[in-house]
Image (tube, rainbow, N blue to C red; front, top):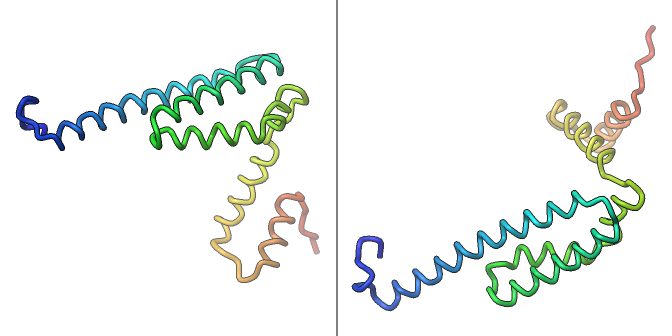
Length: 140
């Protein structure tokens, strides 16, 4: 297809070109959707964020309906936002973040990497408590 002039394309090659053009367009649209979603987090007001999240989800679902399966990953993200909207808005209303849990996860991952595997779950659990609980070894 790339080596032929457009007038010499078969019907199958023309359909492939149209499909590729749609995919490029949808990829750009998905990127724009990501940027808009990211921009919502820069807002200061929870009610404004709620409205923008709902508008974003409606936009994604409308575009998903027009493009078919190509925007399904974005539609899944929109369904996730809709299902967890109140928890997401807690970022504004209560100042909640997952920073503490992310920090613990990083610490636990480092312990697992350092040990390169434990023989039993009990040993690993004890080591995680030891590291996360900031316990000290008794000196004799």
